[in-house]
Every structure is written in structure tokens, then in C-alpha cells.
Length: 315
Length: 299
Image (cartoon, rainbow over all chains, first blue to last red; front, side, top):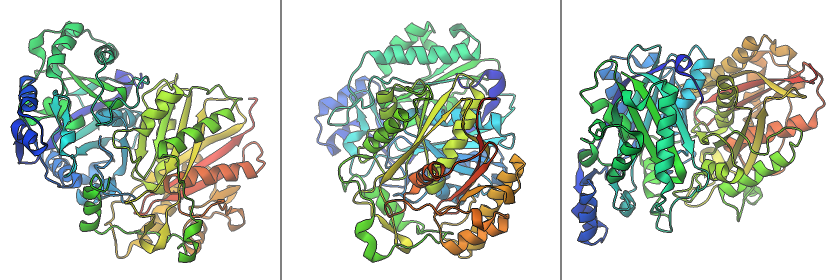
């Protein structure tokens, strides 16, 4: 709704991510949290095998690493970046306030010309919300030609039990940096729709576990459909569906609702990477090797409080 | 809850030193501790929600009972790990677009949100009303007192932006800068003054308004000497500087600019075409400026 394909003019020119080397498997996680082994087996049955563990490392470290890789891989000079937007899902994925995490990341990555701020409170949809903001700013301010969105999140050292989303996902710590450029010919963002279901702003029980809600499927479907319509294409033209790493069984239902063949769902990262908050679809976009020119990718994220986001990228 | 916040406190305390870099804010005397605004009961999102409801109730001349877009500005935490203040407001007020929060700029977050709101409205002709609400509430284990003896106060303020024939204040120019300076630059003050001066002069130049012709100037609540020097360098007239004092003490961070702007605009009787300029500052070199023009409507 915010910006048409012609006017938004931002392309997803590069992606880099940073995951901690240390991984913890589902059985070990269950032991650490005092959970029964049946919990680990249930996770594994749903395609969830492990997560990446930062072991208390700062999200700034992960974000700086991802941005450094992005700049290096794309041969982009730091002084050419006009905006830096930091996003995160967990409130505590920042240096204690009032310190500015965005400012620290900006300084450590030499993005000295960039306008640095954060876009948050859309949970795992915050990176897409940040792109929506940048689309609007770029349309109004010709000086914004190149921007980075970086998302970084870590589960706190003492909050390991919060890694699980029911038996459907284990959160991984990590960061992902996106390079957005005006007028790029490849990987243009053709559709972007963010939707928040206002019927439930909390969405969790007293143990901070998501409350099951069948409206999830309809909201996810309509959000993806809206972004596809905004791109001016049909679901038949979607060559790659790049999911968030939660509720793998539910993706079968969503693919059926979208009428997209199941083999177009990219799941190679689901088990080894884990659910890296808002980074999943972008990590998938970067690692999905068979993206051919003229194809279309559909990226999807959702989060607590009924937050949904979908993006269509023309390869 | 202390365990939940252990990492974030450790990152701050063991990493690059956090300080009030680049900006001498007025120092709170220790004897004034008990006068800092403290909200004992309401949560941050309670405060934000109540403030927005008050704003909408007082804006009956504009059709904004359900605003299209909500933008939240906050520096302090909600202290409810899974709760998004923006999503709560969206749910309770029934706004039509996905809400979001803008932050990490401390005192400049509001002007960044205003810039985003204006850009969103320009990009989407069906986006008619945006509410920006800034709220701060400081709770343990986060200290109200930061370096240089600044005491953070609790408070909230909200602004309604609407497509409306007037009368009202229009955004004529807006600039935000975030220089990539070290967290505690040793020679930061000159850098900081130059950033502030640049954003003010750039804002006026883009709007085609001479700084000397600005009718009301609302500076950030920083050291008086620095504020005076900044205004003077930009050519803003000292007699037009408004010294708005809040009814409560403390630094209100993201909520400071909208709260004092509201107080200023309520205290004056503008004529068509007059200008008010507000500039604000973050703790780490961030600077922002907005130039507002009063339009009496009817055209």
C-alpha cells in the first residue's frame, strides 16, 4: 500500500549474515532447560534440530560482522551509505538505554555519513517495516541512494527456555544486513506489504509462549497475496517461496492456500540455521542458489502480536 | 527481571564507554532527585495510550478517532518482554496501518519519526492521519541517573499529523543528522556544534526562510551557553528564543521535544505565515531541526 513498484525504486542489492559458530541441538537444549526428551523429539519431528548460540555475545558484534561482510562482498565503500536502520525483535537486543546501539554500529562500521536510527516493535517483521520506511524516505529525499538495514537479535544468557516457539521453532542468535539501492536493475523490490492483526496485541501466554490461533493462516495468506498483487504478478509466477523458520508443517497449508507447488518452498536452511528472528527470509534469499533471472521470490515473516510481512523481489 | 537484563547492562558497562558524548545537558543537582518526574504505576504503553487518547479527544475538529498510522518513540524499555507498545496502541485504537517504533536517537527520535510520517503521507495519498507518541519510563535495573548527573524523567507526549486545510502548523523543513563519532569523542563539542548548526541552517535554507525571520525558536534543553552559541551561529534572533520549562524536572529524552513543542504552540497566537523552529539533540551527537509554518486555513 505504501509505494508502488515504479515509485519505490529500491533493490535488494546485497545480503550478508552472521551466525555464531556454536550450535546447540534440540536434545541438548531440552537438557539445559529441564525439558523432557519428548519435547526435543517433538521439535525434531517438526523439522527443528538446532540453534546458533551467541552465548551472551552482544548483538552489536553480530551486526558489525554482518555489515562488514556485506560491504566487503558487495565492494561498497562505507562512506557511500546514506542510511543505516537497526532493527530487532527482542527488546533487550540493544545496549542498555539510553545508549544508542545504532550509533555504536554506525561508528564501528565507519558509516560516518549515514543517517542511523532504529525501526522496531514489529517483532520479526521489523526488517520489512524498516524497508517500508526507507522506501518512503527515498521517495521524498533524493539524497538517500543507498541504505543498509541490519537486524540483530540474541536470546539472553539466562532466558534459554524462551528459544522455543511451542514445538515449532528454536530461536537462533544472529544478524543479517541488507543493502538497498535506488534504481538497481536486479532484485528490485516489486511488492511489500506489512499487516498487523489488531485483534491480539499480546499473543502470548504467561510463559511468553505464542497462543495458538487459526487466524494465523488467513492473515499470512492475505499478507502474501497483497504483496504479490502489488508486484503485479500472479502466484503462478512466484518461483521461490522463502519462509521464516517456524512452523514448517504449517507451510504445507500455506502453499496450498497460495496454490504454489510445494517444491518452490525453500527449506534447506530450516533445520541447520534455526529461526533467526526477522532474518530468515533474507538469509534464504542469499543462500538460495538457483534464483534465475526473471524469476520472482516471495519472502515472508511474521511475529508476535499479529505482525505479518511479505515482500516480492524480481530477480 | 534482573536476569533478563543482565546481558544488556553488561554490554553497556563492559564495552565502549557510554557517556553523554558531545553535549553538555543541564546538570541536575543531587538535591533535586526527588523532584524528577516519576510514574509509579502505569507502564510505558499505559502512558502512551492515555496520552494518545487525550490527544484524539482534544482533536475533534479533525477526523482522527482512528488514526491511520501510529509511530511510537521510546528509549526506555516496556519491561514486558513480549509486549510491543506500538502494537498495543494499534490494537486498542484501531489504526489501519501496521504500527512501528522509531528510536535510538534519544532526544531526536521524535523529529526522525516526524520526518518518516511526512514521507509516508507523501508516498501514500490515502494515509491521512499519523499519531506520533513518545513515552519514557525508567525502572530498575536501569538507573535514572546517567553520566554528568542527568536524571531521566518519566513522561509521554503525542502529536497528531493530518491532511487538513487548517488552521494548523505545516512542516516546512526538517533535517536529522547522526554523525558517526566515537562514543566518547575527546574533542566532540566542536563536532557537535557544527552538526547542530548545519541542520538548522540546512532546514531554513531548504524552506527558503532566513533564520533571522523565524518567529519562535525552541532549542534543545542543553547547556545554556551552547544553545546560545548555536542559535547565534545560525543567525537566529536571541529575543525570539523561547525557554519552555516543563512542570516537572528531569530529562524526558524522546518525549522532551513533543512535550515542549506542545507547550510552546499552546502559549502563542500565530498569524498566517509565521514560523516556529525547533531543534533537538541526542546524547551522542545526533541533531535534528524542524521548521513549522502556521497556516490559518481557508485557502
